[in-house]
Amino acid sequence: MDYCPNLRTLSLNDNEIEIVPAQVGNWVYLKNLHLRNNRIALQQLNLSNNRLTAIPKQILKLNSLQFIDLSLNRITVIPDEIEWLQADELNLNNNQIVQISDRISRCKRLKTLRLNNNNLQLNTMPVSLLRDSVTLSLLSCLEGNRFSETQFQQYDGYEEYEKRYTAQRREMD
Image 1: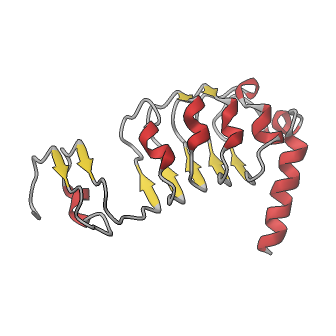
Image 2 (image 1 turned 180 degrees about the vertical axis):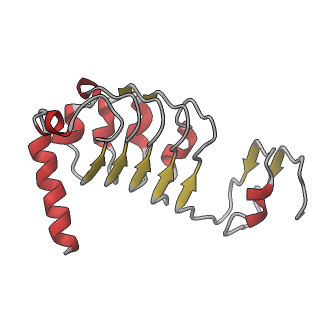
Image 3 (image 1 turned 45 degrees about the horizontal axis):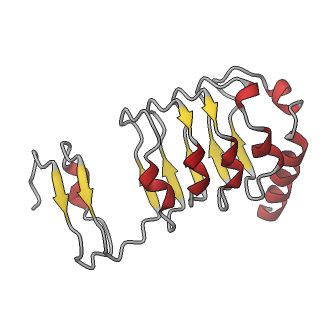
Protein backbone atom coordinates (compact mmCIF):
# COMPACT_ATOMS: atom_id res chain seq x y z
CA MET A 1 0.00 0.00 0.00
CA ASP A 2 2.96 2.31 -0.49
CA TYR A 3 1.70 3.96 -3.64
CA CYS A 4 -1.96 4.95 -3.55
CA PRO A 5 -2.11 8.39 -5.16
CA ASN A 6 -5.90 8.50 -5.57
CA LEU A 7 -6.92 6.91 -2.28
CA ARG A 8 -9.76 8.90 -0.71
CA THR A 9 -10.91 6.71 2.19
CA LEU A 10 -8.92 4.29 4.31
CA SER A 11 -10.32 2.25 7.16
CA LEU A 12 -7.80 0.70 9.54
CA ASN A 13 -10.26 0.12 12.37
CA ASP A 14 -9.76 -2.73 14.84
CA ASN A 15 -6.17 -3.58 13.88
CA GLU A 16 -4.21 -2.94 17.09
CA ILE A 17 -2.17 -0.33 15.22
CA GLU A 18 0.16 1.64 17.50
CA ILE A 19 1.33 4.33 15.06
CA VAL A 20 -0.21 5.96 12.01
CA PRO A 21 1.58 4.61 8.91
CA ALA A 22 4.03 7.15 7.49
CA GLN A 23 2.70 6.59 3.96
CA VAL A 24 -0.53 8.35 4.93
CA GLY A 25 1.28 11.67 4.58
CA ASN A 26 1.91 10.98 0.89
CA TRP A 27 -1.71 10.39 -0.06
CA VAL A 28 -2.77 13.87 -1.07
CA TYR A 29 -6.37 12.95 -1.94
CA LEU A 30 -7.08 11.12 1.31
CA LYS A 31 -10.22 12.65 2.84
CA ASN A 32 -11.27 10.02 5.40
CA LEU A 33 -8.95 8.06 7.65
CA HIS A 34 -10.63 5.73 10.12
CA LEU A 35 -8.46 4.45 12.97
CA ARG A 36 -11.12 3.53 15.55
CA ASN A 37 -10.32 0.92 18.18
CA ASN A 38 -6.55 0.76 17.79
CA ARG A 39 -3.67 1.41 20.17
CA ILE A 40 -2.63 4.80 18.88
CA ALA A 41 -1.61 7.36 21.48
CA LEU A 42 -1.47 10.37 19.19
CA GLN A 43 0.64 13.13 20.74
CA GLN A 44 0.92 15.64 17.90
CA LEU A 45 -1.61 16.55 15.25
CA ASN A 46 -0.64 18.87 12.42
CA LEU A 47 -3.52 20.10 10.29
CA SER A 48 -1.84 23.31 9.20
CA ASN A 49 -2.37 24.83 5.77
CA ASN A 50 -5.50 22.84 4.92
CA ARG A 51 -8.12 25.54 4.24
CA LEU A 52 -10.11 24.50 7.31
CA THR A 53 -12.83 27.00 8.16
CA ALA A 54 -13.66 25.53 11.58
CA ILE A 55 -11.88 23.62 14.31
CA PRO A 56 -12.76 19.94 13.82
CA LYS A 57 -14.73 19.04 16.94
CA GLN A 58 -13.61 15.41 16.70
CA ILE A 59 -10.04 16.30 17.66
CA LEU A 60 -10.96 18.18 20.82
CA LYS A 61 -11.51 15.05 22.90
CA LEU A 62 -8.33 13.22 21.89
CA ASN A 63 -6.85 12.87 25.36
CA SER A 64 -3.26 11.90 24.58
CA LEU A 65 -2.54 14.95 22.40
CA GLN A 66 0.13 17.34 23.53
CA PHE A 67 0.19 19.63 20.48
CA ILE A 68 -2.36 20.60 17.82
CA ASP A 69 -1.30 22.76 14.89
CA LEU A 70 -4.19 24.41 13.05
CA SER A 71 -2.14 27.32 11.72
CA LEU A 72 -2.43 28.66 8.18
CA ASN A 73 -6.09 27.80 7.78
CA ARG A 74 -9.25 29.90 7.45
CA ILE A 75 -10.72 29.42 10.91
CA THR A 76 -12.80 32.41 12.04
CA VAL A 77 -14.30 31.30 15.37
CA ILE A 78 -13.09 29.41 18.42
CA PRO A 79 -16.39 27.73 19.41
CA ASP A 80 -17.86 26.83 22.80
CA GLU A 81 -16.78 23.21 22.29
CA ILE A 82 -13.17 24.34 22.76
CA GLU A 83 -13.64 23.56 26.45
CA TRP A 84 -13.33 19.86 25.48
CA LEU A 85 -9.75 20.42 24.30
CA GLN A 86 -7.35 17.94 25.88
CA ALA A 87 -4.06 19.23 24.40
CA ASP A 88 -1.26 21.16 26.12
CA GLU A 89 -0.59 23.48 23.16
CA LEU A 90 -2.83 24.86 20.43
CA ASN A 91 -1.43 26.77 17.47
CA LEU A 92 -4.00 28.90 15.65
CA ASN A 93 -1.55 31.38 14.12
CA ASN A 94 -2.34 32.75 10.67
CA ASN A 95 -6.07 32.16 10.55
CA GLN A 96 -8.94 34.67 10.37
CA ILE A 97 -10.17 34.43 13.95
CA VAL A 98 -12.50 37.22 15.05
CA GLN A 99 -14.32 35.50 17.93
CA ILE A 100 -13.16 33.37 20.88
CA SER A 101 -15.54 31.55 23.20
CA ASP A 102 -15.01 32.39 26.86
CA ARG A 103 -15.18 28.64 27.49
CA ILE A 104 -11.57 28.42 26.36
CA SER A 105 -10.63 29.23 29.95
CA ARG A 106 -12.09 25.84 30.97
CA CYS A 107 -9.47 23.84 29.06
CA LYS A 108 -7.91 21.67 31.74
CA ARG A 109 -4.49 21.18 30.14
CA LEU A 110 -3.97 24.14 27.79
CA LYS A 111 -0.63 25.74 28.64
CA THR A 112 0.26 27.46 25.36
CA LEU A 113 -2.12 29.23 22.98
CA ARG A 114 -0.83 30.82 19.79
CA LEU A 115 -3.09 33.38 18.09
CA ASN A 116 -0.71 35.58 16.10
CA ASN A 117 -1.75 36.98 12.72
CA ASN A 118 -5.49 36.69 13.03
CA ASN A 119 -8.13 39.40 13.00
CA LEU A 120 -8.56 39.75 16.75
CA GLN A 121 -9.61 42.92 18.49
CA LEU A 122 -8.75 43.20 22.15
CA ASN A 123 -12.40 43.19 23.24
CA THR A 124 -12.85 39.75 21.62
CA MET A 125 -10.20 38.26 23.91
CA PRO A 126 -12.13 36.61 26.77
CA VAL A 127 -11.18 38.14 30.12
CA SER A 128 -11.72 34.68 31.63
CA LEU A 129 -8.87 33.32 29.50
CA LEU A 130 -6.47 35.71 31.18
CA ARG A 131 -7.99 35.79 34.64
CA ASP A 132 -9.47 32.34 35.24
CA SER A 133 -7.44 29.85 33.22
CA VAL A 134 -5.51 27.76 35.73
CA THR A 135 -3.03 26.24 33.27
CA LEU A 136 -2.46 28.83 30.51
CA SER A 137 1.02 30.28 30.93
CA LEU A 138 1.92 31.35 27.39
CA LEU A 139 -0.45 33.36 25.23
CA SER A 140 1.10 34.51 21.98
CA CYS A 141 -1.25 37.00 20.35
CA LEU A 142 0.47 40.36 19.91
CA GLU A 143 1.72 40.08 16.34
CA GLY A 144 -0.67 40.72 13.48
CA ASN A 145 -3.83 41.43 15.45
CA ARG A 146 -5.74 44.66 16.06
CA PHE A 147 -4.23 45.70 19.39
CA SER A 148 -0.88 46.73 20.75
CA GLU A 149 1.25 45.26 23.51
CA THR A 150 0.48 48.29 25.68
CA GLN A 151 -3.26 47.84 25.22
CA PHE A 152 -2.92 44.13 26.04
CA GLN A 153 -0.98 44.87 29.22
CA GLN A 154 -3.78 47.19 30.38
CA TYR A 155 -6.52 44.68 29.61
CA ASP A 156 -8.61 43.22 32.44
CA GLY A 157 -7.09 39.95 33.65
CA TYR A 158 -3.61 40.63 32.28
CA GLU A 159 -2.05 40.79 35.76
CA GLU A 160 -3.28 37.29 36.62
CA TYR A 161 -1.98 35.95 33.30
CA GLU A 162 1.37 37.71 33.84
CA LYS A 163 1.76 36.02 37.25
CA ARG A 164 1.25 32.56 35.69
CA TYR A 165 3.63 33.43 32.85
CA THR A 166 6.33 34.60 35.29
CA ALA A 167 5.89 31.57 37.55
CA GLN A 168 6.24 29.24 34.58
CA ARG A 169 9.42 31.00 33.43
CA ARG A 170 10.92 30.71 36.92
CA GLU A 171 10.13 26.98 36.95
CA MET A 172 11.99 26.54 33.66
CA ASP A 173 15.10 28.40 34.89
